[in-house]
Length: 224
Image: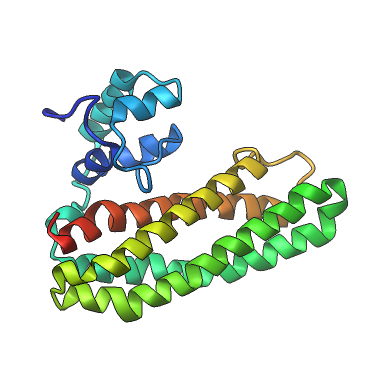
């Protein structure tokens, strides 16, 4: 961790030290859409001691049993394959499943909190409606451009993807707010519990997914 301090951006920190990802997630620090923010500033916004967070990351890294994949050191085609085969495949399976669960929970438990459950479904559908065409545009247009070495010619579609990532990030924050940080009520049935757990996993996976694109793939493709 030498050479890293409070002025290091959270995106740089997670890129060079992937083990930091889980710690920043646990503290609610945005390292994907907010990757350009210095760690000290991000910690201050959450009332955290940046030095304590860095120490926590050092301890986790020292305790790691095996090296974690450094995607900033892998060829771009391999990174693209990883994004598509891991994150896109999972999203295409999970989004319909979570939609069905959200509709079922609204149908059964909606009267307990009509506004919350209705808002949650609407927010999730907005997120799904953003992600489905987003992945298609990446797979059919942007990723082939990057594979071909388009360089600066990829800047316009990358700009669009970054903007759509910001939208997805805002929707994820709204879902976390509506679910009270995914706290499962005592009266929740199995489907309700599964929905909250699935939404929390979706948030974690999307944060990792967007980080790989915003902080590694896009800058490298553009030669930044």
